Image (cartoon, rainbow, N blue to C red; front, top):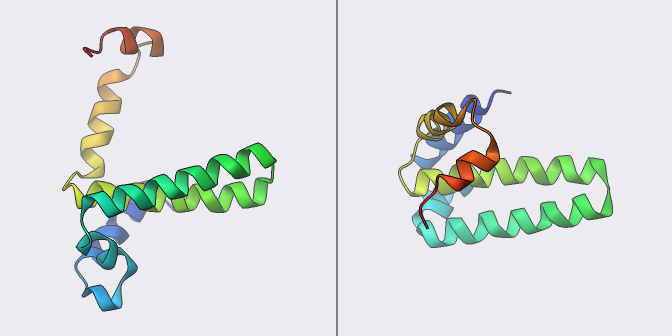
Amino acid sequence: MKLEDLFDIVEEQSKKPADESWTATLISLGPQKCAEKFGEEAIETIIEAIKEDKSALIKEVADVLFHLFVMLKSQDIHLADVLKELEKRKGKSGLDEKASRVF
């Protein structure tokens, strides 16, 4: 599956009634709840990475990607916006990109 396809699924599911879609339920609870769920999944992913259980890690990464896209949708951010940002960074070293940020 392509990431764009997963994002499209999140888009479609977000339009359903909350009682018919986990995605719609999360989005109806607001951006903060979507961010909390993403954070929960990220922590579970870290735990599986530390345990070095590849099968469990793969499943958690799938959950992270899904909930990342739900969080983006809750903020009305499209995957294309993120991909554009990554494209702007193409060819830059991570160190240079980080140094260019204003904090």
